[in-house]
Each structure stands twice: as C-alpha cells, then as structure tokens.
Image (tube, rainbow, N blue to C red; front, side, top):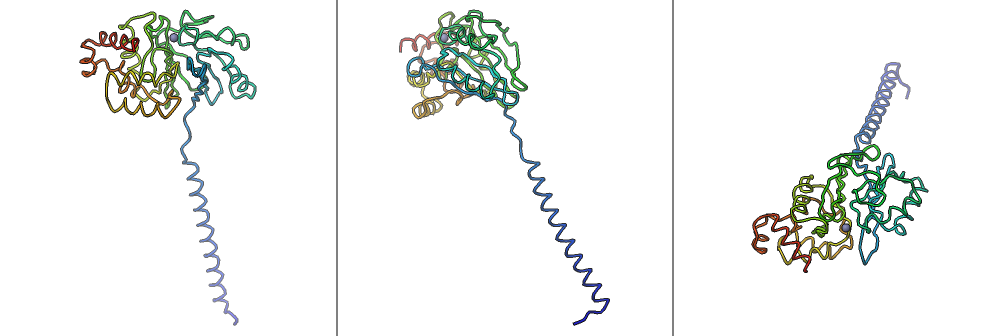
Length: 300
Ligand SMILES: [Zn+2]
C-alpha cells in the first residue's frame, strides 16, 4: 500500500513524537536516580574508638585508641601494659591507619600510667595527664580543651578523689560523645577513695560528670561491671539495675555500651538522693550517703 504525501508526513511526525517521548522519560528516570544518590545521607561520625583489653582475668584494664577518621590523628589512653598495646600500635602505624600524636593518662596509678616509659622508647610523644603521672609533659587545667585531628574536641575534667591527679577526658565530634573516666566512674560503680573523700567523689560524679549530656558514652579504666551489679542489687532494686545485670551476664565487655544517662539510673553512687538508698544507709545528706555506700562496697 502506497502512502499519500500527507499520510507520509503524518507518520514521520508521529514517529518523531514517540521517539521524543521515550527520550524524555529516560532522562527523567536518570535524573531521579541521580537525585536519589545525591540526597543520600552522609556519615558524620569521625571519632573511632578501639578498646585494648589488658591483664584480662586479673586487672581487667582497658587502654583506648581514639582516632579522628578524617586525618587519622590518634591518641592512646592509659597504655599501661606495653606488651599488649605496642603490637596494636605498631601494626596500625606501619599500615598508615593512624598517626599517633599523644599519650593520655587518666591518673598516676601503675596500671594506667606505668607503660609510659616503655612506649616512649618506641615513639616520641607528649604525655597529657595528671601531675603525678610518669614522665607527664602537660597537665591540662580543669575544663581546658584541645583537639585531635579535624573534628574531635577534648575537654579535661578534674575529678580528684581516687587519686588527687585524676582527670576524666570528655571527647566530642559533634554528633558523638564519649567520656574516658579512668578509675573515677565505672559502669555501675566508682573507684576507691585512695587519696580523697566522699565530698570529692560526690562532686566528681554528681556535679562534674552528671553535667555531661545524658547520651555521652562511658569508657572506664576497668571491666568491673559484674561485681558492681552484685553490690548494687544489695542496695537497690530497680529496672535499670536488673537490665545492667542481664547485660553484664551475657556480655564480657560493657565499656561504651552505657551512657551518663544510664549511670544516673543504675549506678547507686549517682543515686545518692534516692529515698530507698537513703533509708537503707540511714542518712539523708548526699555526701553522707556517698560515704556509707563506699564503706559498704569496700566491705562487700
Ligand atoms: Zn587507679
């Protein structure tokens, strides 16, 4: 069948229109796909925390390697047992995964600052810590700040009691918050009052650390949670303590899994205003309650 010139023109026009429509819809689909990729949320987390367990089964200490993921600048906190910490540092430095810039110590005790001299034989680093820490180069003032890499801001918080040179280090990277508490605050407990008193521990826990945002994750110097829960259960029965009990029975490590907000619920040393605890110890004044709780824990 032969087409008239008008029919031929109409057919050409319809085919062009069809081709145009297909092209436009393809472009629209592509544009949508690209837009979807462009709108994908970007990760804002920059702070990476690696726990290094030391003397497992005896001291149950933790050293922590904290890295700014963007610049790779890193600090090592309380690297007290070099045979367990140096292999980790050596491997990461050799593979350019980290650029180690500082040692940080939470207090002078040997199982926290006792590795400094040996670490310094391998790496020339400044030591930031309490005044009595071995070979300390700088003791930051209370609430003074420094940065690690591009995004981690560190605030030194003086918390004298366990030792007079105890400092907790509060790390922020904008969206992520962590506090390294040494032997001042444990998950569900607190350190012994070796160089201080109940007034100082009450201030350290219930004024200085309690003032941090509730979503701040707690990284203590030891894994003592099981023993702390055993004591807490003798003093108080609440839902938070039952949950901590369950978690510590099922998990060997509890560091970084609980926050300052959690501690206010399950840590009896941060509940000195709890009427049930006050009734049990027979005291109503917070410092007196703190003193009684510590004496009971030391005897338990
Ligand atoms: Zn200590």
